[in-house]
Length: 547
Image (cartoon, rainbow, N blue to C red; front, top):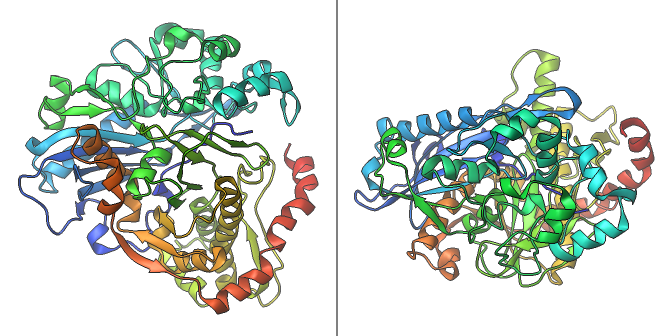
């Protein structure tokens, strides 16, 4: 089922071929306006944090990032510390002023994006009263199964019908979504639940920390599956779903329109950050939604592919629909009365990170991304017949199998580091091709051209492989690592009335176009059909070994 995605930012592949003008902690724009109003932008992912300053039209003037670490615990616990988030955000915001030459007095707004389907328990002042329950924390599984669990793909048909009809998705029986997190806190951590006034999504927790006001939006709460999404702009939680779920409605923050102004920055926070107390905070958006804006793909069926830690393909669509078999659905969009396509692939840049770390573990020497990419470039398209399936932590779309695992296939004595390195890049591209085919069936049309964003887009080689495997024109947006920061800045510009959504595509520049190479396309067509067959032939083994 469509169940709490967990798309993440591209921090894990942030070191891919860094351009000097885009390196974290330095100015990006070459035409920085001395007096132009600025937006303090925050992109909070599960594996990395970015903080930047942009104009209201999305031009990035400075940014920096830091890695974030999740703590794993017993019974499927995965947590982070929201106070740590706040301290890091404040430090990076000050770094932009102290070292990056940003004038904090120019800040007129705060834009927030990041991970979703995680839960932050906070008190009435917005202070965390317990660890963040991350999107992939499964401790609430038994409670979620009690609500929707059954024998049809893990669901009870009557419960599934109710949720699909209203939301387009359903709670995750594995416990990896906000609804299960709420139930876990209420039933397994009563001391935390008692101390918590609100259970907030990360972007809403940050907005409250800036303003003192607790709010949520139809976009930020999509991972809780508690709004009737037959209306693309739901204005309240669905009473039927809230009652059936067993969550405490009193801990759900009031809904406000997506992309609306929450309020001004608290005076004490403004002093901490070195920005005016008149700066206004716009309600936070999940990274999927903000990437729609930051990629410039705000028109119907204008699609982008994100290759970050995970991957997705999305576009605005004018209809509500669910493809249960392939794990695609349309959900309330960026607040303009339309929907956006949602899906997720669990491992994209994560596969490259895993391969690099594995090589380092074997050799004892660090393996730089540049080395891995240089080696991959020496192998021919098709990697000498080697195939890599990137299902390191299972898969969601378009093959829903949490038991699936990654592997190299058809490796021979002539297969060396170059072939294996290229096979990893190609495997992610083949996986994306499967998702693209499903997305085009969902949309009822070709999604061509396809814009590309995320850390993986920094590599020319990887972009060309994606073009050749998908047989689509690939348009790389400028500063692809900063799609979240750019989108958050544009979101504020839209909320302030300075930017119209229809003009967003004109404000996002493309720095290079990659077109399919006929010779490479022929090589990939030969191996592409084998990719889904590998899962079909091995799914029984995956289930026996990993269930």
